[in-house]
Length: 369
Image (cartoon, rainbow, N blue to C red; front, side, top):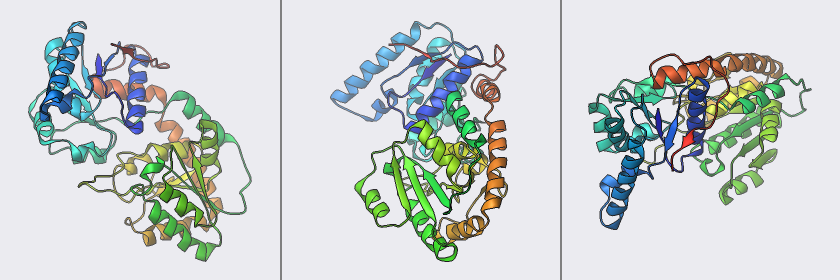
């Protein structure tokens, strides 16, 4: 099969594509990868850039011809749909799944929506039932939850297995790309923690994620007591943060109009649970597929700070209950992230069949340059 991948995908999309590729290799599929230089964007451009996009198209066609017949063309980002259609006609592929990673379900251009609706080979593949529902008016598709790197999954599970005494101050953790702190709902979380601390006493808030952190975020952290910022923590440090928090909170704002934002699934919620930490998910979006409501995770009534504060106060008042929920969360997350199950899900969603071999560890895709 052939994977059309963007040259510089968003970090969340990059992790999804890596997991998909590993699942395909684990099940015995041969995968070739082409980066069409964002070919799909050329159609709306003019002038010298039009010529450059045409050259990119010609290069993509030439490289695709060398593959011969392939089973499936996987489009790694919706703006590469035109390239996927051309590649399918050249190679005789009978399936062209289109991977959606987040807000692209709302922001794709009209001509891409038209192609997705009209071409019989195309169908969307989303990471949650929420995403599938959002795209149902365009085309019925498949759901493929994100997979996790095997080593990272084992690191998180190892941290969950370590028993630690509760620290004196309850800890709330939030992890996200730090330059997205506003759309990830940090202002509401800061206010909610402040409100909860009036009833519970001091509450420690830890913020972590890939940087660089903007100055405005540093200013917010500096102005708050018991608030920490961890910029670019390594895997081991991040796993410890997950495992030593009482509660993980992801508070992404869901907006379907420009500038769009939202959580398609919430991989960080799965990571936190693997490490033995119960979670609070966004009030809206696709994250409800990523935890068991009322057992391993909770959902605010709405996106307001008071609604979030209400849940924080209720949960942090009984830290022993949270510890029990965290242990149950780790067991549940271990079960739903089984690598073999993910490989079978990848094959079902992208190829419509079972793996060729019993799923084992993945390997990197062949890159055609």
